[in-house]
Length: 418
Ligand code: ATP
Ligand code: MG
Image (cartoon, rainbow, N blue to C red):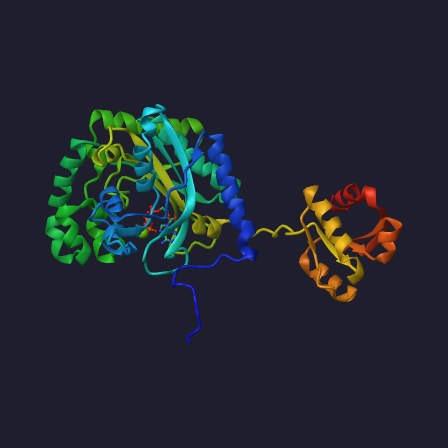
């Protein structure tokens, strides 16, 4: 049989890397909760139609990237490629809008897109994200962006650029669309195949294209900012003024557009300039989607959110010494393995991270494992210690060993750990 391997672009995260993952996830949860967000967990599988309607038919995700299949009952299902559509579905399904004026949710979890794998681009990847329903902004827009920057700063990701734009709303978009098509039409022959096809259906996506042949037409295109209505303009000014008041540096990027069809008004990206990101430098993308909930059959409700790629955050983070995974390694003679188990439990109940080698190997081999484990402290238990009530405490880095009375054990270990 051929060697069994994971699916291309879908990676194992092994225990050696888990410390960094936990650090990112914990920092995100703590920050989101400090800002008043509550966690939501939605299924990994959804009806395909949710994403087709929620993301838009003429998008990279829906056209090319979804893992879609028929289940045994003939239902067409898709592994979620992003979190926003599922959150909106859950919010509508459970009538959350009728229970509270403003909903603030966050999520953490894997997403699936069949793209070409590269550094920072995978077929199973992980996002953390936030969604807010019921607040039209602009203050909350700026607060959301500032929260992302604060989160990255906490993790040592300092070298970032915040790009903001406004896509306007209502007829702004319609008027801009016409001007954009008029600008792109003369370039039609030299545009990429995707862009030629999208020219009528979704001309904004031509600006978001990564194909080199589209760059010139995109760079000279009219910008949305010239088309904003007075209300859109006031909203965008409000976002910028609030960011300035918060002291969050940003740049206006008039040609910034993004994947989803539904974005209105505020749009933003956070680009990483340092670390090990390579070509995949967009760490976070988000925006307002005031039209989506109404279009999916719900009550017209303003909404804004962002999603951040965890793998890209990890690539941007500075290296740090990995924290020791264990506090204590228990080394025991073969005849006292039962009391050694009780001793390990006592320390674990006291909150320490403890490993014991219970296979009955030689003391020498157990000490080798203790040294390799990274635990700063080894506790040595033999017949003599069990009878006499004391335990040998060895500080592995220093090589010092002292005898500690059984009832002072936890305090002595804590002292040795500093
Ligand atoms: P890109 O332009 O890099 O394809 P995108 O616009 O498709 O990104 P979004 O849908 O906005 O990405 O997702 C938000 C974030 O999720 C991205 O900024 C990125 O950090 C992360 N992300 C998206 N796709 C992938 C992927 N295939 N692998 C790893 N991270 C991803
Ligand atoms: Mg993409």
